[in-house]
Image (cartoon, rainbow, N blue to C red; front, side):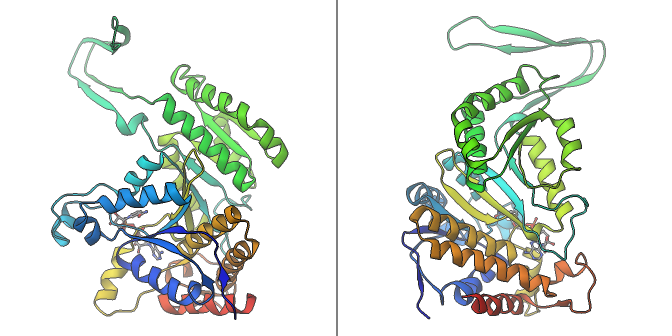
Length: 402
Ligand SMILES: NC(=O)c1ccc[n+]([C@@H]2O[C@H](COP(=O)([O-])OP(=O)(O)OC[C@H]3O[C@@H](n4cnc5c(N)ncnc54)[C@H](O)[C@@H]3O)[C@@H](O)[C@H]2O)c1
């Protein structure tokens, strides 16, 4: 069979532990035999980040800006224990935080649905994507314990001007205070990234804050979204999709009665909480895709899960593993589909569609990894397979479709 040609270069970012092993298998078995592609390769395995003083992470991010699209394996974010394990000279920053910083991106997480795993919310028929604003608010705050009576104030001192003050509270006894911020630039980028993603996916966009209570802070988020939407209104109308703003409490109430299928744009804390709620309600973290989208329209696809360290240690001991490769496969199909769309090569898009269908059908026919056995609809056909067997079963299904 002649290989399908991927016209332009994309960026491939390798990672760590079990996902690095699965990554290699996926390429060797279900991509390289069928595709003729050129990937600019960056090794973000922790050892290479150490060897390059983490320069490789910044280089990878700039390569995505250059080529427009990339695919990333899961990577270790070092902590004290990893410093010892990998003999690191520094506790390198989270690679995802570096990539997000350079691409100024927003992260969208979307569940992969199969017919024999039912969401915990009965009405959900289509995937709900959560778009999380990953900057500021409570994650970059200043907090203080108040020991006793006194006045707590909020003060802004302009670069050239007199301080402006507001009273937070007149304390009559001990308490706590917190100060947080966001920037107009970051909120605008977030709004644009959400609107670009909604257009690309042809999905409605829902946005929620609590602007009735937080009139200035949340009110500013709403105002920026409204202003940015003015530039997208026509595009949304053409695509037949809607932008819908409401209070977060009203939105939560509607979303659990909806059939899903929307992009839910969330402020930082809401997104942190709601993306885990949505992941769990749809079944498993191993079935969540994640894509980082920049305001200029650069795309970086990955799985939402980590490097599956526990199974990696089993693998090192020579024990059998059963790692679910679905979200990693979808990271590749997301990247290939986007490359195909950008290049105007429908045969590449069709390959991505076929690979996703082959993956879903493998599970729907009862062949799956251990993490899904407990949540799938009971059926005598269900069987647990190991990491390699699952990849081979998907590849067999793919070959039948090509
Ligand atoms: N995007 C990323 O690169 C990313 C995200 C999260 C964590 N991490 C890194 O991954 C490492 C491990 O972190 P963790 O254990 O908290 O998260 P993890 O997602 O790797 O694992 C959490 C649990 O879910 C299970 N699990 C996750 N994905 C699975 C899959 N595909 N198949 C079967 N089981 C799966 C694991 O076995 C584990 O029990 C850490 O070093 C962390 O820094 C990276």
